[in-house]
Image 1 (tube, rainbow, N blue to C red):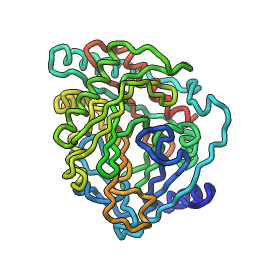
Image 2: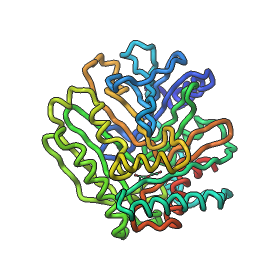
Image 3: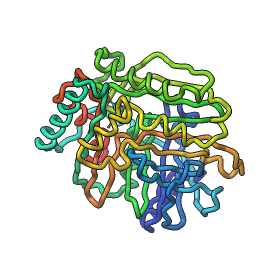
Image 4: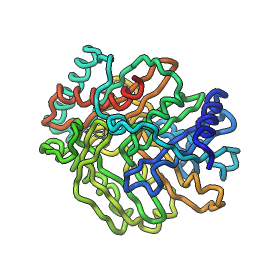
Amino acid sequence: MISEEDFFEQIREQYASGLPFVAYRKPGNSPASHESTSLTKAVLQQDDALHPVKDFSEKGFVFSPFNQNEKAVLIPCPTEGKGTVVLLSRFQRKKTDTEEKNGQGTPSGRETENTDRGKHMDLVQKGIETIRKGKLEKVVLSRKEEVPVTLCEPVAIFQKLLERYEDAFCYIWFHPKVGLWLGATPETLLRIRGCVLYTMALAGTQKYTGQTRVFWGEKEKQEQQVVTDSIVDSLRFKVKSLKISGAGTHRAGNLLHIRTDIQATLIPEYKTKNIAPLLKSLHPTPAVCGFPKDEARLFILENEGYDRSFYTGFLGELNTDISGQQDGNTENRDSELYVNLRCMQMNGNIATLYVGGGITRDSDPGSEWEETVNKSFTMKKILD
Ligand SMILES: C=C(O[C@@H]1C=C(C(=O)O)C=C[C@H]1O)C(=O)O
């Protein structure tokens, strides 16, 4: 364990040297995490090699795009013999202002373009019509937005994420051959510890206005139920028992979502086997793609009109608890992966933000646009 100052200094130096790294903190208040809120980790690669993931049997930190035909990238962990350095520290929140912590309020001085609004509403309208024709039940449609930034020091932006979003998985990821990404996601894709698998169905969105005891409409409940049903279905034949919680309200910064927790005991074959078949059946869930999955994915690729890249992909510890690597336990195949939401890619002084939402037959294009605007505040607030 090193001091907070040394931790941030070393990742700043790593970035300045143009070498790949990831730094992250798991969510504080999540059933997916067993760690204390403040443990911050970094994995620093010692050369600039690009390690594409071959079959998900690798150990390290994985960064995977939405489109599974594109390659995921690994920052290998030290046991893979690649000379990676792991740093651990504890992050102390400095601000006491509750609004800072809660992530309420709206960022100042940034107006979204009207042309983006029209384009997104047309896309949503097309989605609704396709659903009404019976071709789909749900499709998640998204857009990207470019924002000029004045604070261009990425590690300082990461520190602001840690400060503001205690209950999110906060990260900064860099590879000179891929780019620089940051995010604070509320969504766990999957966590495996031994034979126990945890995942969540997170969908339905409303603005947080100081209350977590809120009313959810039928549209949101139905849209979230599709996610729960599909996840449960994709785990069939891979697990021997399953516990599904009731649906509850989950707070993510300035937003609220409906969340169901799903815990399962894997059948032995899937405990020791490669995680790939589990990932293939879970990702992308209808929370970020739609239902039926193949039709929704096709609709997205044909109609969204831009490349999602790593947005709505996943990231996290693959086949390893990175902090436990020094114990020499090479058999450890535990994983903890998060869906890459509320994220942005930085290129010089331009941040590209990615936001989307689930569309069903009862969606209203204007409200769906508003939802993406609200979601964009998660990142815009830390750029202010
Ligand atoms: C697609 C996003 O979020 C997902 C879609 C949600 C919705 O449709 O209500 C809610 C949470 C996430 O599962 C995003 O944040 O960009």
